[in-house]
Image 1 (cartoon, helix red, strand yellow):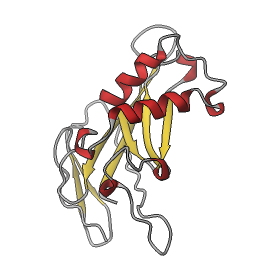
Image 2 (cartoon, helix red, strand yellow):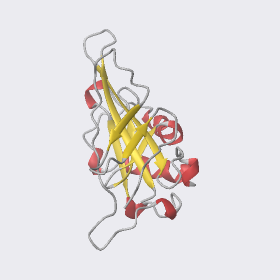
Image 3 (spheres, rainbow, N blue to C red):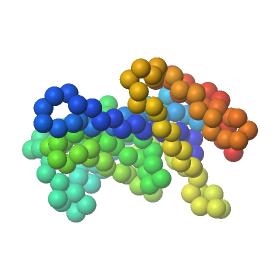
Length: 178
């Protein structure tokens, strides 16, 4: 595929009776290292929103207790929310309290790759290989020590010493896809 997606889950306590959870995502063009936006994918924002509305009203979400005005939140989620690509498709993740009460957690909506045709430029969709779906998963654990400078990480990703440098709101350098 042409996209590298990173997600990060954070748990923090800001007072009150429970901790809070947040999911962040950042997406890069695997060829150029440029940060991607939905606009950069030539996304049909209205079409994506309509898909999420239908999905939220489907049997899969029948047990969710959405807020009365959650449909307005879906529009915001598509236009400026957390999104990333997974093995299954394009995922939109609504933070706690955005669309539903805290007890519902982070609410995810996945649009399968097969349904993305016409909703984003097909050049961004993964190309299946003879061995199965394209793509790979890499997990990176960051130290949670508060004294650690977490503005830049360098991770060795293979035995040849290939490195991946991560910086917030920056390009990804040193990535070789094979």
